[in-house]
Length: 256
Length: 322
Image (cartoon, rainbow over all chains, first blue to last red):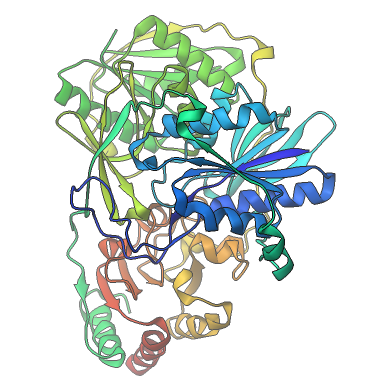
């Protein structure tokens, strides 16, 4: 089974986010980056499928040079090789443009399965996998917690809203977007980290892929959300703040 | 037809709440763009839900009906709407931002060379659409520049269902051409996960815990506060994903919806998936080390601080007050 996992490098969860001078994106200098969380679950699902059925796991990502460590992390966890689409201005593309780049890199690989995370922790559009499927003319399913390979193709467990689930059968090859929590993430071993250094990372430029990535949707401005609710902030030492809060809950909100 | 088109989501013949909110959003867009508004309902039997929708201020409601639309599939819904758009050419298509919509609208938009502007929280003149970035820490303003229909999905709770204006719309039927062989996925009936033993929906006091607790070893500290308050313990998704608490304690769009008198969010940043689950809470308290965490926007009272210090102090204060 040849599995391609599309991953994204995103700002670290606790990173201090600042808006850039032009007000069109975030200030990237000095920012710490990490592997997008649901992509980590997609990678884990791919590694488990490979352990069960054999084959190859290829990670695919688009981004500037700084994505290097994220690619090495995926290789250290067990991916066999990587494709890096070198693209300096990813944030100027829309979801369709990014997916067109990824699709152009996936196509010649002819994978049996393409996995990606449900959504990115930075833009949160949750569209890449679905668009990728359409561009590759493959069936897809989203919010997947578990993947079983069958003789006919795939059987997957899909999450629905409010604690409901459903099972979906679909033929392979297919594209699946993976929800977090369906499996348990592994850590890279020392041996894995060592091996990752010698694994193949093929770099292709966006220009080489020759796709039309001109946006049909433009992010014009980013801004801090306007406060709409007046939250009473309780200050002082932890003890003082806690006492003030209990006072408020008891006599003002009357919920204690 | 041109104009604004709202795609309604229904279950068992009834229109979902999120769809009424999408109609309210569509009416806002129709006013800004000075265009008429229509709605469609897809399914095998749409008479009842179409009649419900026709009570709103719409030019017409179209029943897109086909036996193969009985169960939702991305292939079926995409084909049906693609054919309908080819015939009617809407300028804007508005959807509720549900799991189902997330599953097929990016595909439908791609087929028409467009990109969905998803999870929209506000619509302004232009039109310019606002959606959240960086887990709710920032807002982004998006403008469509394509030549085809503009696809928009609206976030749950961002527009008020009761603001959807009433009227009387004409109802028509559209029959798409769909073959069974064109539908590649076979969905099962929906089913529940493991039996629910915790009903957070009925709890009067809930303490919710998020990533901010850092380690499962810190859970007893939180449990002590919950015990002192006589509260149930709930959690944001990551805590359940890590296996630190059972999935049935998850609060949010994929877990339980709560409506307690008191909800205390500890170390929860406030991603929208969590916020939609706590909307019914009477009083919300947020304790977080990050003063910019979006959870404070949803809170009545807030404390910025280290959970390891604030939670024990709060437990003591609660005990002292009883």
